[in-house]
Image 1 (cartoon, rainbow, N blue to C red):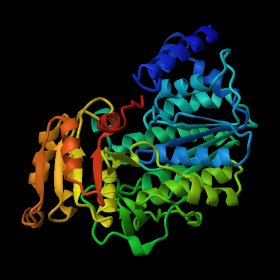
Image 2 (image 1 turned 90 degrees about the vertical axis):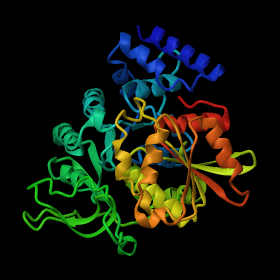
Image 3 (image 1 turned 180 degrees about the horizontal axis):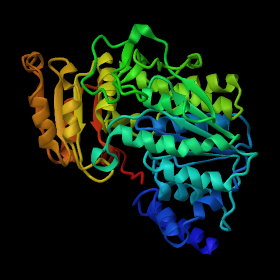
Image 4 (image 1 turned 90 degrees about the horizontal axis):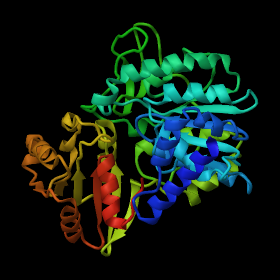
Length: 444
């Protein structure tokens, strides 16, 4: 039954790409899983050295792409299965394997690097456990937990409990290593609840602490006793150097910050550290890691991706929750933005509830910046821009609402000087639409 499913999947992917209907990132896997719910285990069991799973609210695509680059540079014959389209639920993982398998369903790869949706991790990890023998490694990278799509996921505490429950069973797996963000209290706490080997990464950069707390702080209470945490300093949202005076829980000691990362933004420092230590655990040498980070890494689609359109430079930022949006805004403000396009959709990949935009600190946007808003919920984000602080309102920010996305892109591009950059902030489905207009190609 495996071979017909794989052939059908390959045909669907070919048709999808040929007709520019997408990259075949989900439907081949969806159909295969309908007829064989263990097809993921069939593929994973064939990977030679093991599986690296990357989970978290923000940074999954960038981090997993970096890890793949590191692994591929470590040897001429190192082939990696990777769901690079960003389709990160089970059908996307299966689709990635189908695209790289032979017609008979054989996988000739040393590693699988799988970006996994935070809500899907508790489902996928047990399947991977069942089909990998003890000689193959399981490396689980947990980046962060922020409020994201509350209508689908619930609060961050709920996801944290699911992660903790599934990772507690990893105590029996000597081949498992956890790579954990020590600066996120919920993620760091998980390491103390499992006997699996844990490596903690984080930042030691007091010079870039925020001067004031963000409005969007998602997890400032101790995961052990429930008391409010004390912070020596915060990098963004609830990530920083934290401790609990009540029960003594504190941020674990972290591995040293050793990697230079080519993309801007404090959040990309976290992505680079996570990728670095995952690659080290996979046996990649430090000389290879440093050379890839400096010279070979290109941003994942929609994550600071730069596209030339009508002779102008456009840089796209995926902005799907308050923490990520605030971090991205700070990044472009440092780059002296003049013209930005905000695109807000409320489709299933984005989350139906868009109330989170009121937790984004749009008040930090400098005066005299031209803002254009578009997307399915253009008027919602337009209203949010209107209700900025009195300081920003008097700074003469101009906001234009354009429901039609293509017209919004064209008008924003026309207002952008050739020496300047148009910065686009978009939710997930909106980002895909923006890329389709700019490049003429679909991703999924």
